[in-house]
Length: 125
Image (cartoon, rainbow, N blue to C red; front, side, top):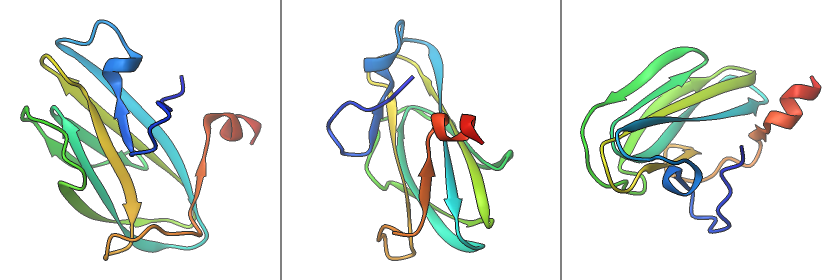
């Protein structure tokens, strides 16, 4: 299922995608291809609690309610050369539900040579 809400603000709004949305959990998945091993930052904000896995290893856990704030959290991670799988789990009590997520350098700039791999592209491999 596509999460494109046409706003291009980086917010994945689960409330617009799934029903029911109170007292539930949703997952987001993306694969990113890196031309080499490198250190990057995952910058994100979630409404409500969250877990993030990189290549099947849990790298972040936050279990508290509150609004999603752009770049509220920053976690330094190492991408391996090739395909990296990122899984985001966001729980919801009630009300708004979703998350911001982006991958940057240490200054918060985008990284032009990373390639985000869609589900359709992964299926072709």
